Length: 380
Image 1 (cartoon, helix red, strand yellow):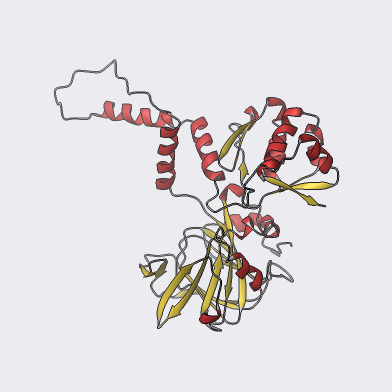
Image 2 (cartoon, one colour):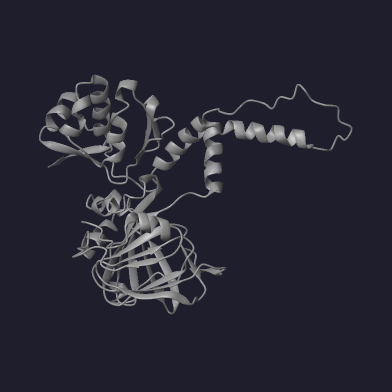
């Protein structure tokens, strides 16, 4: 699978469109094939570990139901949609689609959502708070996109936040292989013209409110930032109810000093690599030994589990620190160079790891990850 941008290079896209304005990319994927069939998607939606929804109208009112689902016959032949979140957590082939957009770093990546809709199906006019590339699979879907603005939103259903009617700045019919890019804040509405599938590659960041809340939990859980404000050089005060500029500066300094680079990278690494959806991890240790891993690498590659995130920071990678699945990992200094190999690549081969396979510490750590299901063996 290859992204075809024509004269629009990734550099131009980031400069002129990313988080700025929507864009239709005709035939961004030539000969695009659905990553799975509607039947396979319905099978995923039967699993209680998979996050799924179906949206439809009943007597003119929007309805939304959460899976797992075992039947669809009662919904009829039109006007309903099935959505599965985090397809990349369950379908390895979704990685091929994600890689097409790797000019955007993975810490910004959220998930791949797949949608199957019957004619007339959709989820209603709404506004997203994330960037998304909507890649049209089989079938056709009409999309209307409005401009940013003070659009009123309302709950069409407890699980559906819709927006008021809008004038479209884009009104387009997407065919297989076409892509619609939407930045946050643009109202949009997609209605299926014939039974179709679409695959949405989403990029999200948390709000400052959510991150500050999670940071507070991190400080409490790890008993950090416990120092008290000190003011041994306090001046005489004759207004007991006043917080003067000097005191406010002390408070601000105390807070800002807490947020040093090490703390922020440590917290952010854990936060950004935590999966919001279930991962397909084994319930028990898989029981591989180090010698097994070495032998199997001679004929197979290690594939990172779908949905598993691994990141490193410029500020701490030289100390051997990186983050995986919400955990901080510290490797010895002699293994620093392996961290980009682990985090930047979805696949690990004997050749790519050759420099470190004689290091017992690394092979032991790699074996632990394999036993936990973070990487799994796959035939070349």
